[in-house]
Image 1 (cartoon, rainbow, N blue to C red):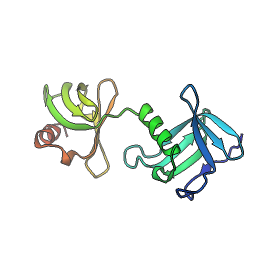
Image 2 (cartoon, helix red, strand yellow; image 1 turned 135 degrees about the vertical axis):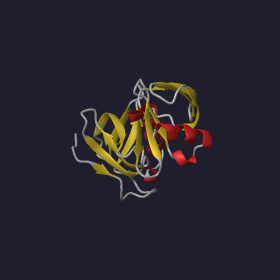
Image 3 (tube, helix red, strand yellow; image 1 turned 90 degrees about the vertical axis):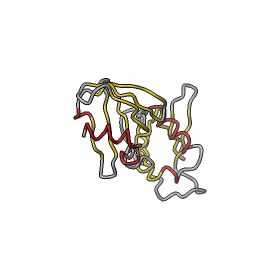
Length: 170
């Protein structure tokens, strides 16, 4: 197999790519190069999953080596773009908190009832240190007692009650 990293940063839509993705009967992704060589069971990995999820995606082989690089996901043609999105969605689980309904207490540990992009849920916050700021845009990452990560994209865009609850913990 070729060990070079195949880059698509300079390949605009409509141009032939130097590689393509296929899904086998078991649902695994395979990277196929124009010369016919294959990398079986490849996995897309985001370089910046929270800050820039559409920028910088590595296609990694089963042995952990980067075999292709996608500078901008939107630059890829279909079906590659769709296959990468499907694979990432299936592997990444990070619900986005849209509203904080209630908390059982303002001291930790406490149970939070929240509305996420995946529906209503509740979780236990072990301590204030499980709420982390990411960047200056008001992005927060909240880890529950089972180490599930919840994302708050912009704490300032939340409703007043949610912001009031968050302020008590920060």
